[in-house]
Amino acid sequence: MNTPVAGDSCPPRHYTHSTVQLFRFSAVSWNSHRIHYDSAFAASEGFEDVVVQSTLHGETLTRYALTWAGPNSRLERVSWRNRTTAVAGEPLTWTATVRAVEGARVSLDVAVVKADGTPCVTGSVELALV
Image (tube, rainbow, N blue to C red; front, side):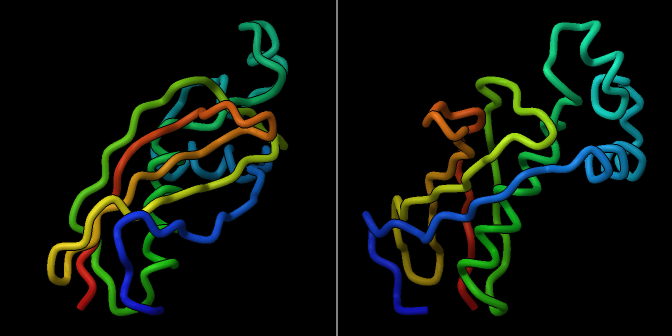
């Protein structure tokens, strides 16, 4: 990776979450809310399918930022706000822009956006490039 500069855009990452992935993430994170693994229950609550966990969004923001920064990077801080729900099978895109570079520390403005451009998650990730 070249030395990042404020204003740089990171290459976007396109992905979807499967119902199996959401079920497994609920299991390992001890999240027993049925909207995350039971499609019929999620539908009874008004959702199109099982709902992506907010903590999985945070993990995705972090994982893709660390992948972009490379194997010698270290997570310093992550914060995010959920704006709207995403469901299993829905096309999502991770986006990031370099907000600031201070020595070895890089701050990113990050988001997960839906296919129509609606942000379902916005936040920031701070990394140390070591």
